[in-house]
Amino acid sequence: MAVAAEPEVTGHGGPRGRRPRGRGAAVVAALSCAILLAGSGAAAATPVARAAATAGAAQVHWGKVELVPGLAALNKGDWNSNYNPPSASVNSISCWGSGGCVVGGFYTDQNEHLQAFVAMERKGRWGKAVEVPGTAALNQGGNAEVGQVSCAPTSVCVAVGTYTSKAGGQWFTVTERDGAWGKAAEVPYPALSKASIGTVWCAPGGLCAAGGTFTDSAGTTNAWVRTEVQGRWQPALEVPGLAALNTDGNGSPVSSSVDSVSCASAGNCAAGGQYVTNPPYNPPPSQAFVVTQTNGTWSKAEEVPGLDSLNGGQQAETTFMACPSAGNCTAAGSYAPNNLNTCFPDSTCYTVFVVNEKHGSWAQATGPNEFGSVSGLTCPATGDCVAAGAQVDGQGNPAGEVLSETNDHWTTPLILASTQNVDSVSCSSPGYCAAGGNGDHSGIETAFVITESKGTWGTPVSPTGLPAQYSATISAVACPPKITLCIAGGLETPANSTRSEPFIVSQTG
Image (cartoon, rainbow, N blue to C red; front, side, top):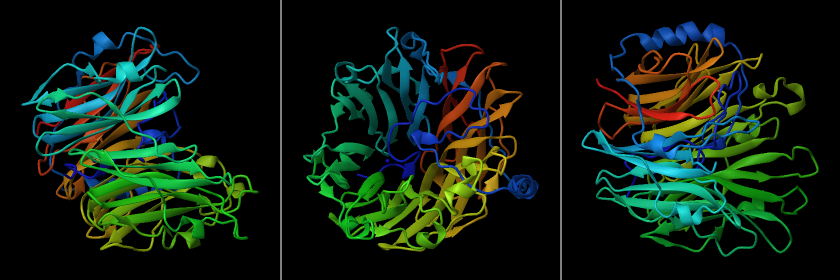
């Protein structure tokens, strides 16, 4: 996310979408992936869940927020649009050890163009943020950002992001070694007709995977996957087996896409997405699929086991994937339990599924009750994962929540009172995690962090040092492997301002 320091997914593989300030009741999930969830009863469940969460939780303290060094000199533009998104943001964080981390995101330059940045902490001291080398020449359309950073224990890091060329949206990767960033390289499009890239995942050491869509000679949209090994991209492959699944009932292929991908090691990956089964309907019915690569060979895609009986509304998609070891992955996504015409508001139409792969075989999917949107998925070990997101009640009111898996058993979702969404989650080892997101206080968006220690979640707290009357959110969290202190990043925005200020905050123990 050689193997990433932690197989964490904070989205479905693409860069985090720019998020509007002051979301109110809206739920905006990470990496431009909003999966809204059905269910009510938050008020009844909250006191019990919170009491269980607080009892016995170890006291881990968060320090004072600090602005990303050097970013103020770069972030000179104001972003003005109907959606009023921030002008700069921390999108992703990864750490290889205590005092050694990388953050990535975007800022707005004086020409109102979005540019990608990275900043590095070495031996506990943060260096200045810099524009990702090489993106100035690539980003001719003025819309670049880093969406994912990942660091190995050797301190080698890789960043993945997007930019806009004259031809349209493109993806890039860039590697850091010994404190120096190389030059950003374009992720090549596959030699397929009208191909588009939907997701890219990379780990340090030249291991990447990507997926997307292409259009065949019959005008059908099909899904493809490919991997990069030791810096060399392999030919793209149409996802095997989808043609048999992806029909309208009369033998005619319809459309499919890869929306998430992750690898445990070279040649051992998994991907997921959706396929459409009957296009005359609006929206057309869709099903979620998963597909596994073992020792360099992709198996046949399969519908997520057990999901067909849950997906009464015929709307499903696999949007998150994490693989802690070869043949042992976890996927998460959304489905509609009921007909879309029978639910209101729209935020109550969908719920979340999780499904585990063990020794190369996918188990039955489960749909946790009262779990509404997924913004992050992390698996520090096989059978030990944490999903984070939000629940939406029958009136459309969101509340942040986390869902933990221990020894292959998913627990009851933990609803976090006075929050709206958990945007990111990370674990250093099973039972030692941190998460962050946003809430709302008197109409002002507020940031929070929450810590799990010895398998017990504490209470959400607001980091110190955030100015009063500033809106704020936590957008990324990282916990170095086998180290119990974590780091978070986010953004703060002064009232009535269009210029946001990305920050970082660390645990102090």
